Image 1 (cartoon, helix red, strand yellow):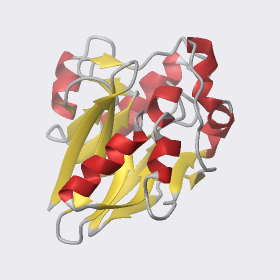
Image 2: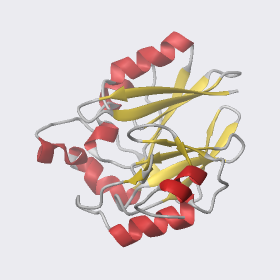
Image 3: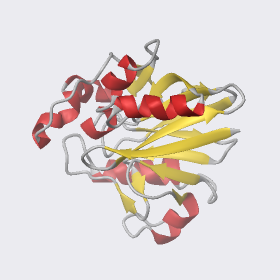
Length: 210
């Protein structure tokens, strides 16, 4: 069974997700946004062992907990990020623009479109979805019908395109080609706010209609 634990952390209330295969107790973290020690404790409480960190993109509110999380683990796990966001990662996620300073943690490994990642017995496909950021990716598991969308699409809303690297036409293209082509019952877990679904967004998202 794949279990999802959600933590809303940091100055802009960013969703961090811990995914675990309850048979093997192997776990990964999607976007350790803030308070890395708290993320590690939440996994430890469940008896889960964090093996990898997956990043949808490198804005500071999605990477702010990496350094502390890594220090809280017995071994440094692989961290995956699309190379088009390495520049932002090196810059600390752009935190200085918002009055923060963060340690971005160890250098990530390259994430590519179509790459498969695993947590226990479950396989996720990374899909490159630029628009909010040039290196933005989402993580989709066909077997369980779930997708982690970062800041690409939210409950009846979409990610910002007014920050450096953002582009509205590219964002719309990513949503139409990588999200709206999926079955309507796919559950979407976003970087901010509540859970939604592909069908709901195609029908009710007034920014980009299906």
